Amino acid sequence: QVKDIYLNQRQVEILRLLANGLATEEVAQALDIQLSTVNYHLRTIYQATNTNNRTTAVYRALKAGIID
Image 1 (cartoon, rainbow, N blue to C red):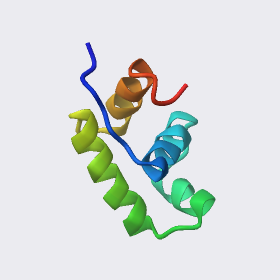
Image 2: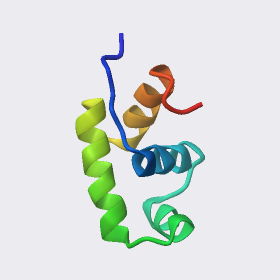
Image 3: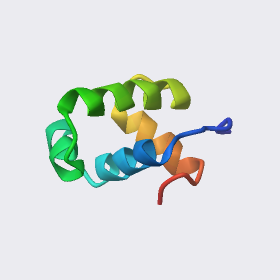
């Protein structure tokens, strides 16, 4: 069971891009933001999803219905 996960719109955007296979640098380019900003969002995504890597974070977001 996935507990409640709360993410803002930008974090959901980042998760969608990660789910589509983009690397961190590619996410930054796609969203026209700094790499450090993507890394900041990744840290908050990991906290919110109680994970420590992008694969598990994407999986939990999918399971929670946050992304499809």
